[in-house]
Image 1 (cartoon, one colour):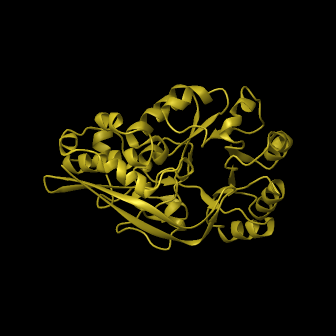
Image 2 (cartoon, rainbow, N blue to C red):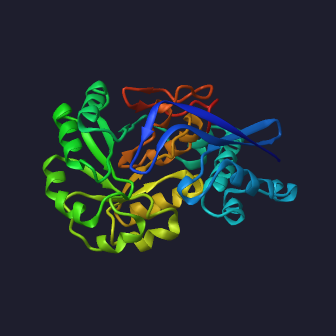
Length: 324
């Protein structure tokens, strides 16, 4: 087994603006495992708000010995690295290699067919009239995710709802709201038919949400990195955003999926931005997710070879040449 890693960069078609940052381009780590003439590939961005970079991930992966790599299994990968981007890249590359080594690919490995899925499309944080204009221009996309901070949040939501009365709307506050704003807006969010509110408060304020009977479902993102966090946030959120970069790959994501199904939590499968190669393994979790947020490639000016086919928000399963 040979491990190869290299950095790649992707430019955004337009600035991607959230409550915490404005992104013009991203750096990612390409991870490849080769054995027996076959190659398993993956892409990982890591968790930037936890300090992960392509350099830090490359350093972690470079410490793996040839002996360690020769005995890799998905279960073994979980013991080698902590949750995060490095483990995500190694784990998803291994799944891809295993899929290429068996007849039927990833569907055969997991015993489940891969079907098309509909993704949310993200509207960057902006002034209300600009967000409404963006929503109108995306009239062919029926599921929208609004990046909102504490400034003019209601005005932005009202403007988008007026522009797109039929759309399903999810809000992502990226932990930027105050508790007072959250409580003040609850009835308005219900009236304007918000399907889900993602990470309204900073992660260290989760205690404010415990047993809160909020008018719309709340979803944990930054508050829930991996399976070890699930029990802690169970009484605070009705939904969990599972991201492969956060939790450390498909193996861990499958555990989180099973927990959500067991305890009747809604699931979102999300992304940290990235190409079709980064999104492809997440399509496995998307098969049973309530909300699919895998629009990263739509924001890029370029993509990998054999990209995901996304037409009017509908993602086709990844081609075998891409992943799985």
